[in-house]
Image (cartoon, rainbow over all chains, first blue to last red; front, side, top):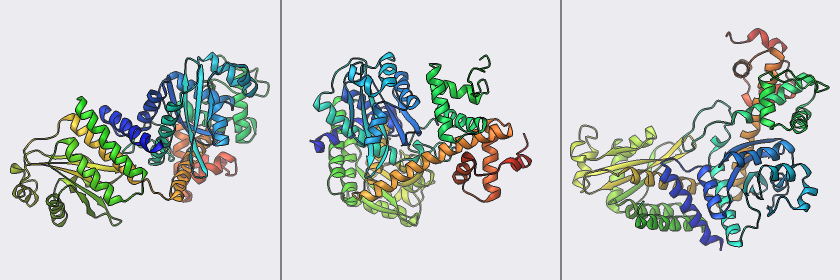
Length: 249
Length: 246
């Protein structure tokens, strides 16, 4: 029952924050989600549309990689969950059916070591604010009790994110705000959008097309989106028309 | 954390969160919190103060009538740990009130008269704003250990978040819109930095400073100007002359 689970989850999150000696944060909620779900990692992304997102927290490098892959490819369980506002549960990413649905992510995600992926949209009324994503190295379903617990975690995470705008730092001035430990946007996140701006000028195209060019380059050259964006921002790479003219790194 | 304390902590949040899920009565919720804090933190009385819309602290709940009087006292005389905590947004401790007369000439003796020897105030913070303070009173001198301070602050934090949970769905949607707005603004700022860096041959730091100074010069909101720059609807060619010097 939801009513019984919610107090339990709140208690776990607050106890974790108390033990860390820091304010209650998305990190606590993500870590509790990992523990109750019996998975290996989680990430929390704030999104307004498929082209605009920021990773608020990832419990490890692999979680961050799975999150970025879906943004770079523009497909995956999190993308679908955000679009539909419903759960997307993938007990075995390597199974054939998923490859038809996400030809890019099913392969890349499995290659990154994800056996199972579970995406929970964070929804406030009519508005989707982001995604709580989970992965497990080993394939397999979430058990029903775990699923209910994670639903409560996801809702609590949504409340935490809403209770502090500092999670996304709308002003970009990097000010640290009370109540949240916030390290600022990861560099490669800011750089994706900076690179988009640069490419839109370089190629004389709109922002949407500029992002598409960036994504396409990363995909074609099998490089992480953030890495390509950094190269563009640091002027080590210019996406010229024929894409063959890449200066040495 | 000992098992007993862990268990009590879990039970406290059970009760807190029960209140959060059900019909939400703020005062009742805070009274429940105050009662639980007494038990959980092994203190003798708890008072909660929230700031009203004018920024004045009001007592909203306490675990005993006696503590309530103390809060009122603090408020009236504009001194005391709770007020300092609210002003500075930081925990304030008074481990021996018998020695605290120089610091709180009115509050300290009155608290001692009321039977309290020590006090601890913890801020209740919402985003970058302090909305109130949780005041813990003890009959014996001393102060909370590190663990107690951490747990106390976590309780204050969870209670603050819980206070946000309006049953009104529209309010949740307003918060969600604000969050999306903040995200979109930030994206626009980063995109605008890229546009300026490319057009005017700047690094990202210079581009940001230029964007900010132009927003001031043109008296426009930063996010709105950034969106115009990012989409190319702002002519930035003549901005080069107004670049901040390196």
